[in-house]
Length: 250
Image (cartoon, rainbow, N blue to C red; front, side):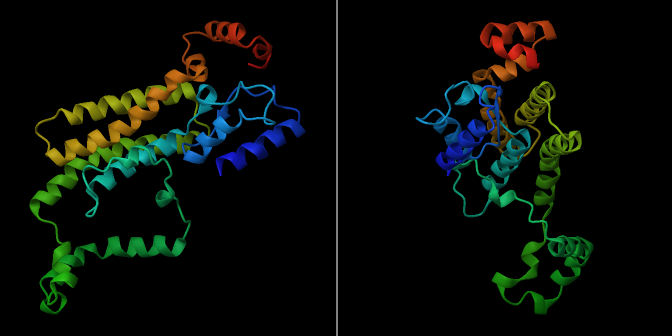
C-alpha cells in the first residue's frame, strides 16, 4: 500500500510542479506511510530526495497518544501474553477509529446510566445460575476499584494531550515537543511511585515506552530542530545552510 501511495503522491507533485516547494512529509505513524516515505526515493519518483525518508517525516502526535493508550489496554487483555511486545512495532490503530455511529453512542450512555443497577442484578439468583454468564462476575472488588482509581491519572495524562491537540486545530511542533516532555516526566514519576499497585506502574511503563519511541525519532529530522530553535534567526540560519532556496518561504 505504501508503495502505491508513493507512486500517486510523486505523480501529483510533478503534475502540479511543487516537488521543490516542500520541506517535509507530514503523516501519521501507520506502517504504510513509513513505507511510502522510503519508496519516494525510488526510480521515477521524485527528482530530489529532500522530502523522503525519516529526515523529513513529521509524525502525528494524536496518533502516538492513541498508540500509548493501546499499549496500556493490550497489556491487560485477558488473552494477551506479557511477553508480547508487538504493539511497539504495530503502528496501525484501526481498533481506535471513531465509527461515528450515533446509535452506539446512545447505547453506551444508556449503559452508564444503568450501571448503578449492577449491584441489584448481582443479588438476583436467576441472573447468576450459570457461572460463565453470571452478572456477578462484572462486580469489581475493592482491589480492582483501587487499581482503576490509580490507573485513571495515566489515562488522563494521555486524554489531556489528545484534547489539547483537537482544540488547537493545527498542532505546532514547538508546542508538541514540550507536551511530550511533560507527559514523559509525569509517567516517570508514576513508574517509580512504590505506593502504587505494580500493575499501574507497569501500565505507565507501557505508555512511556511508546511516547519515548516516537520522541526519539525527532533526533532524526531537521524539522524538529528548526522548530525548537531558540530564535527565528537561528532557525533561518539552519535552513539557509542546509537548503538555501527555501529560506524565502519561511
